[in-house]
Length: 141
Image 1: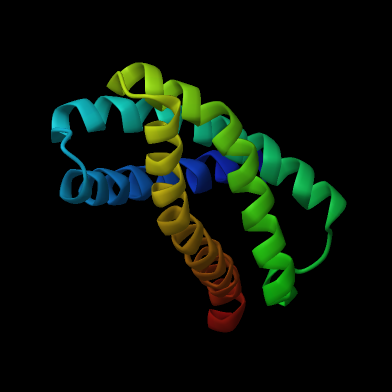
Image 2: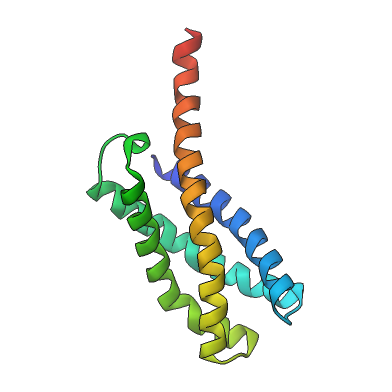
């Protein structure tokens, strides 16, 4: 992917992830949607930056057709990404929501589990959709 597509990939991922996280946290915590929105936007900005850097590096190390990546490889890719993100986001959540690190850890892990499943599905669907879109002009020729 070229840099502009990487940015599109990351922004689309984060917009959908923020909406999902706000809905989940509003349902399962005592925090209002407004404070959660601000917190999740900051977390998403951190995640978007990490997404760009991490996937750029991952793609340089793991080359080849992305649609041929195995499920185990996609699982490892997602777990490493989320673990790196947790290190930074737990203190941010604790500070922004004025909660303990333990509460932030539990909140972040809960969201991370949901987002990890979402990330797996998002990247799988994105890669296959992209491959289809790239093939369409060749099919129509």
